[in-house]
Image (tube, rainbow, N blue to C red):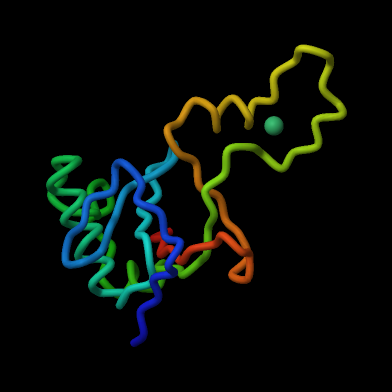
Length: 130
Ligand SMILES: [Zn+2]
């Protein structure tokens, strides 16, 4: 299994590194996200450790104890993201002075990442669970 860590992978506040995997649960739904592409079981181990140490859960299956390791591995995704400070929404429909909800969301965070194409000049690899 190969691992990918693009040179432009940013150092983002809030990520904790376990077993060599920088991981954080991001967004309103707390999507488990790792910087870089890693061996899936190592990623899951880091997600579980984050759930225990940062969130105080027994493990990631908090609230869904019926899930098996195979179930979780089936939900592991590799993707690419960029750090952004603006949304890609067309603002022409907004009234003068009206705020764009997505822009406000982006401004309210220290950092904001969004999916991007692998060949984007600033994209970096991520792993997601779910
Ligand atoms: Zn906007």
